[in-house]
Amino acid sequence: MTRTTISLHETVLDKVRTVAHQSHTTMGETITELLNLGLQIKKARRHSQGKKRFHLKSFSMGTPRIPLEDKEALNAALDGRDA
Image 1: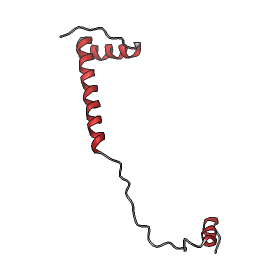
Image 2 (image 1 turned 180 degrees about the vertical axis):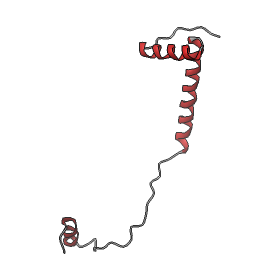
Image 3 (image 1 turned 120 degrees about the vertical axis):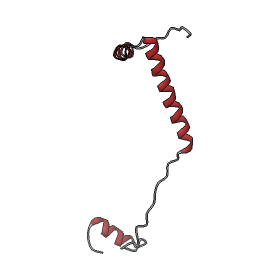
Image 4 (image 1 turned 30 degrees about the horizontal axis):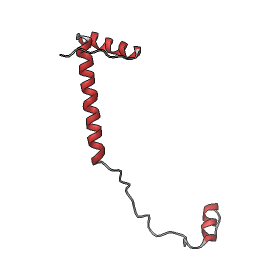
């Protein structure tokens, strides 16, 4: 195992210490495990982004009740009054 020095924000370090203590493992083992999980998630997201595209479903709304070319009828319908 290679040794290295990393800089962690104090809040992150506290969380890692807590996880290490609860799982009865060393800080190094805990950081390695958490980094591996994070890397797997990042890889899965990157892989899925290329395959999934946004698709908007469309539905038929039927025939309009008002002739859409009739501005007065449209305005009347939007205002809630009879044409």
